[in-house]
Image (cartoon, rainbow, N blue to C red; front, side, top):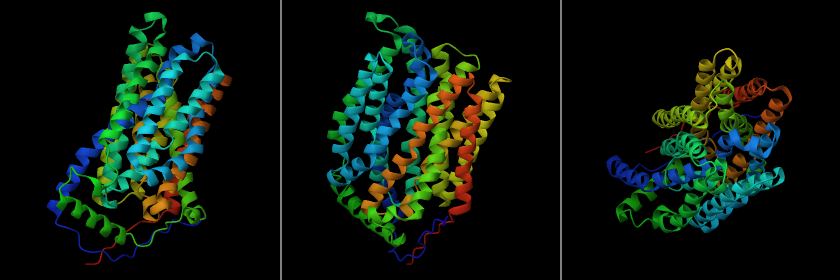
Length: 445
């Protein structure tokens, strides 16, 4: 396999005054990041709430773990088919139109899931959830490249992506509390109330997106004219410092570097999706059966994950290094998964500590990974390439939960599946160390 060669020659103009530029990016951060953070929290809560409602939903509907695992994973098939078209559409029509459509769509599907009675309907709605949510994550990654130069992106990515960890902090206790306190209210089960209560805010947020979001820095009236100029010049400087990058999506598909990144991210997502959809099951299996208790335990683990994501992004930006930051974080995640599998029957506390370590490592690898595609992709290739990497790699989100559910149904144990996922994640570390060289951006005054 060819190594990921990255352009290292560049001629760029001098950067604008640091203090003025920092002030401009600070304003951008305070305007954009909190809003897209909230949207990602809502998306993540609506995506993964099935991991909590399964604690009672499966028994009530008479479904097996295999049915749940397939339903949880089939979400990513919808992701796969619609992610690239959605990102190309975002580049053409703008972020706010695209994000509005996506957010309203997934909120409606979440609400509709409260009415499922059959496995077939469950599969259909989970697929539809993937269809609607498909363009959000890669769309935001692309969107942030319009606002931040490469040396500031890992921090921005980390702040945005930590929302998935914060969603775990919020979503677990919220789902557990709803299931405990609202079961039977107006003839609805607790798990039905979870889908309803967590879906409505997303629909509302979709309409707010249209009013609030700005597509590009040059359209940002909330920046001063001078700040818009400084950001424009800084983004131009950054583009030149990266040297030549592929702008044709078709050409990028023939590039071995693209497929290397897809394989690496596939390994990371296999672990991330396994922890997302079966983390509550691990907590239950080691002896904590109350839904609210399960929620609070998962909340603590995801809080640690949020800290890890933000810290790793900040550290990556500070040292201008993303390769080893991603590799070591993935290795930490793999070690945590192996520890969880090894001690599930021997020591519940060590198993839960291992799962927390796995969440921290796996989630911390994600924001710095997204620094890598921008090293050689731009324009349509960046829009389609980011979506392509995410969509194909997220097929691991279909395969891993389905595999875990099938193994749990056939053996009664989760640990064999967790060992397999740990081995897949450590492969990401091996691929990064072996095939991705160091990157050094050079600017000539």
